[in-house]
Image 1 (cartoon, helix red, strand yellow):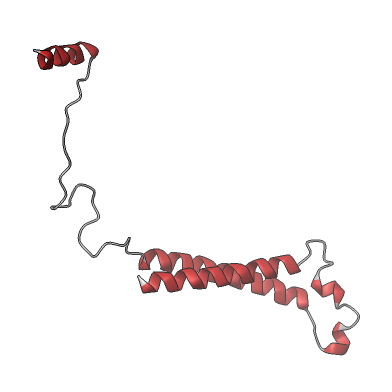
Image 2: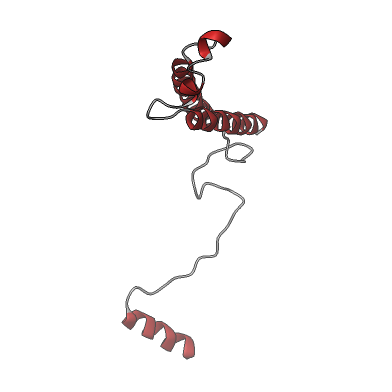
Length: 114
């Protein structure tokens, strides 16, 4: 179960980074890259939009991979054995018969009253 918890933590971190990368971008081209437009060449920061675009795609791909791997690591909290319902040897469920029609139900109540 520790592997699944690790995947959940990694997925959460990647989600926050992906939200940050998406929120910094501006769909009209005026995001972070336009903020540093004049100072980009002075400070050495170039093609910020390309970096944010590539980081968004990379983080999205990592997120999908982590989700798929976490599904493989998930064991459902069971210690082993089959996960088919009703295949447990130790569990017994009480059975009650329910009449299918109202006439059968009336006959059942008359028989129990006698």
